[in-house]
Length: 166
Ligand SMILES: NC(=O)c1ccc[n+]([C@@H]2O[C@H](COP(=O)([O-])OP(=O)(O)OC[C@H]3O[C@@H](n4cnc5c(N)ncnc54)[C@H](OP(=O)(O)O)[C@@H]3O)[C@@H](O)[C@H]2O)c1
Image 1 (tube, rainbow, N blue to C red):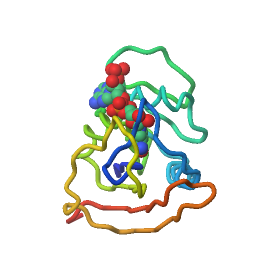
Image 2: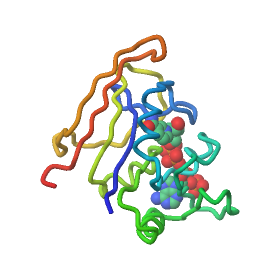
Image 3: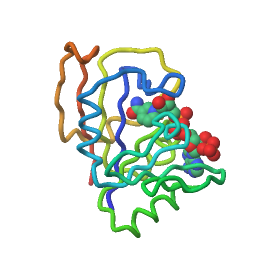
């Protein structure tokens, strides 16, 4: 089972502001949907609250150290990353997407084989950042530039990395 991170970050690796993603980039959301459709997504409790609903066609595992009542069928609570990954494995998943936020990225980063990064080509006000990572330990396997336009306030790049040596 492959473990991947999916993240959008600005040039200073900011990912969030006041429990929101600090930009609205519809083509990035479209790619998020295409990549994750039919798969398991693991998110932290704060990110889940920020999204506020299950995502159609995907099973979301929400990490929290507290007990929570069961939600919709597509949303499962887990109190550790290990338990979340076991749920995915038992379900026969082939690629699990870690979709944030920062605390969950930090826990998952050492285990992850692939990073799908959307690098937003600006610096925004942020209070949440992607954890430190060594870019030279990762090899770029895909890169695609998207200009700013009437629907996208910022230009951005999709950059996919795999861990060197894999
Ligand atoms: N740009 C992006 O790609 C992106 C993606 C996702 C989120 N974000 C942004 O990131 C921000 C949220 O990030 P965050 O770091 O503050 O919060 P978060 O990671 O979404 O959620 C943190 C919470 O998740 C639970 N948790 C985290 N790790 C856990 C573990 N290993 N085991 C069990 N529970 C665990 C805990 O919940 P309890 O407190 O309930 O125990 C913790 O308080 C928001 O601004 C959001 O919009 C950005």
